[in-house]
Image (cartoon, rainbow, N blue to C red; front, side, top):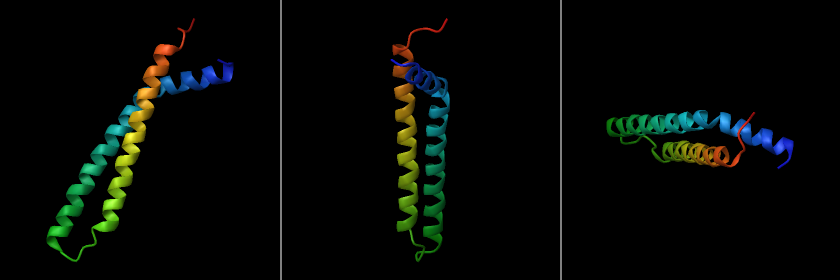
Length: 84
């Protein structure tokens, strides 16, 4: 592993908790949006739910990607040699 690759991997490991936090935050935002848009739809049946469903889907895909980065950082942490 080159020095640049090792620095990249160590930076990812340092951000591991950030990735998990961002994933959880995205799930909370998606849940909030589901409740909000459902309420608006129940109050006004002409409320366009389709475009909002796409927004929720994108937020959930972001949460999935952040969780994937967390898992990669966890694996990298195990593979990297300990620092001196």
